[in-house]
Image (cartoon, rainbow, N blue to C red; front, top):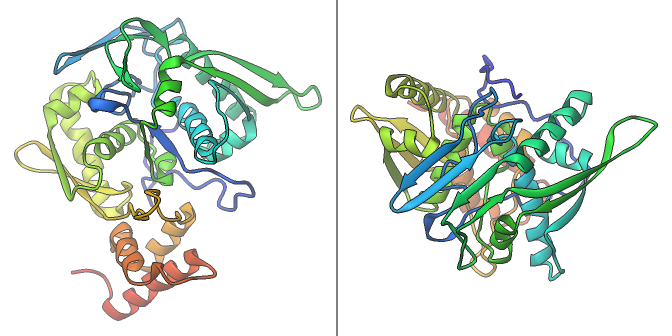
Length: 348
């Protein structure tokens, strides 16, 4: 399981692979039409302990029943595997290549791309996640690619691991995605996530971010009542405890600005407010987001400009200079933050 304890310096997990020597395609998340999908409805468990009871969620005429296997419900961290698979398929589709629901990937690449450990424990956790993804069954009337599914299905149909005898570690993975997930790819019902999504420690932070990404999009602000947020997160906590958890995340975000793309606050009326940081830039012609900065760049930029909202500074930097060619955009952004701090100091 992922450590849920908060680091004293930052709520984000460390960037375990700051210098990646392989291509990581744009990270895409299944976002299904008509607000009906895995970003909209609570399919994945937020618990760090195995959740073995079926879950039923009803909202605006949509009914979703999620049934676990003996391994428990698939968790929000298990979802990393699907995000990676969808990302690979979308990259191929956008390049004009044929795609299928069967995907062959390297286990090491998946672990590194999703900021997971590559030791023996990391590979063991990966296999456990595959078990939960394969065992979790969903029954719903959700739509993907303008098709309505009214039958039970899994998140993945099956998987196969090839293990090297010399290291006893898995080297190759073959994953057969379910028709439901694959149809989302074919229909291009996906949204791009910030790379720091994989560095969010808490399951609730991940769920809150994907809900904001789904509903807020490029809008300046999105509000949701605490009670409805709790429902969409399928939290089993009392409202009082849920309020405490959201309040803590809000306080950390005000201090560290760690939530990607959106700041989050909890007001006195129990409304959770997400405000767009302006970090999602799109090319007008292609509709794809601008080149992302490296994950460690945000840490270095924050150190260069302590107290400032780094994502807001990124928006200002992109608007003023990103269209100009730069040999090293990451260094340019860090320099921009350092110069701003030198001129203005900490924000008042």
